[in-house]
Length: 288
Ligand code: PAF
Image (cartoon, rainbow, N blue to C red; front, side):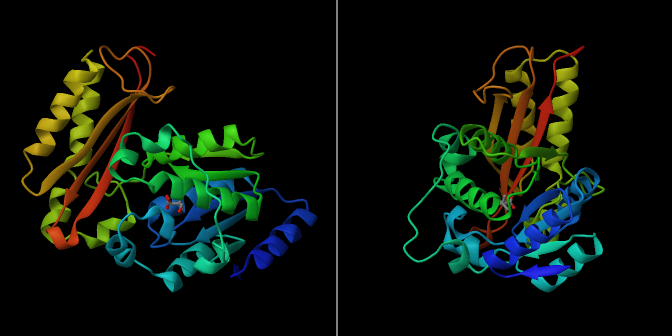
């Protein structure tokens, strides 16, 4: 596997793959890899001839410097995992390579970036869209893969690709879970054993919501059961619960007559080491 530190390195790797007539799938990450990332790679390998990955802890998507500093960095292990997964090359740039001196260009999905998760983390989705746009321009893949767990992030990226006429396919990949249902996340390693044991409440609340919706419950009833279950867990502080119309990404209400996305987040841990976990579920109307 090629390890590329500069834009020029990764462009020359991709040019070589193209010269051999190979299609290229991209998996972007911030490292601290878990099986969820490797599921993205596996999916990409199934659809494209070669897979290029990236590891870059993007400072512009962190509102809080402590969160950026606390983000786990495990480059050597990550590279070994990518190599074992059959990745052709991994781009691992420094901040200065991604944000050149004097950098002043940003990409923002103006409506989506300010909603829901974006309202509590101002600037987050601007940072994500900007870095993902840069990575798409650098690698120029045929397709790119993102986890459905980051439901709003996926919507932001799809919007950006449509609006900026970017010539690639975006693939959303189902969330990979631990045996007890907890969605895999690089943040899970920061949980204390007690918080780790409490964290599957998010998945259980979403399971209950899905079962309720299957019996014809309204969006309000679904929201009520999720809130009740998360609030009953003393180690969790509910941070966000939004149920949106999956097509328009606007708040949903009443009976579930078209697909809706539930975005749920909660904080765990003491004030000096809060860990924000998110989870998501898409509900389809009964009989659809
Ligand atoms: O989902 C992530 O890991 C990041 O937000 C991404 C897409 C790699 C951009 O930094």
